[in-house]
Image (cartoon, rainbow, N blue to C red; front, side, top):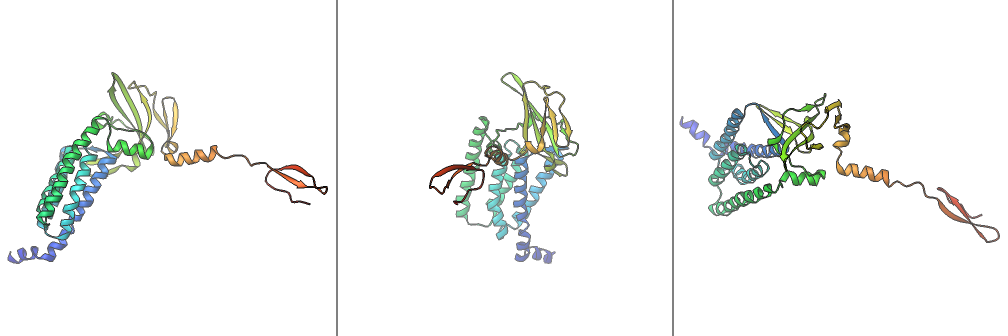
Length: 299
């Protein structure tokens, strides 16, 4: 028993184990990316929450055990920033936000950095969470979120998805690459239904949960009546019929810059210019000539 305790307290063993804490940095980064880009669809929310809390707790124990090692110290400084990002991109989903926030706070306070650094950095982190959270919640009240801003900048389309209004009755293309989703909510006394096409092939599946890719989806119809779209259906794998018109996926998901460049090339292409030249005659006079692409030389 004494040999075992001596072994696990060996500084080289602790240093090696501490590198595992860097996995937690990747884990939180992946969680932030998935929460921001996807709709979380779970079979059993309770089981998923328990597993998520357990994973966070496991890393917390590992990092506390190696809290004085350099890799763990680096992790302890980075994870509060990632926890803040998770809070912003997943604002309101507290079962996802609280575990990494608690772990990052405990490990940062327990890591082996100087007390002066902890005081200064800890104060900055605290202000970041409190002030940042309050400011972001105010922006949300005006319908402005990080997703809204980025979608508008990247895709030139204002888009704010309210997952609480999302219907799980999907219309999926035959090849499974695209998915038609509708959001129904009341606005100004009217029932507004918005239809979006999502790239289903970008979904990510894990045990007990599927992240349905919603970032980068395209709106194809907004109507004031819940059932106003007459028989929406997939004509083919990449052509959708909705509201009396067909929508091609290649054109729908074309990047705005690429579409703009293509439009510019087709609209600004002018016919070959006709060039007016003169030819010197033997008498010294000049007669105007016209040519499409070639010029004449003097006799």
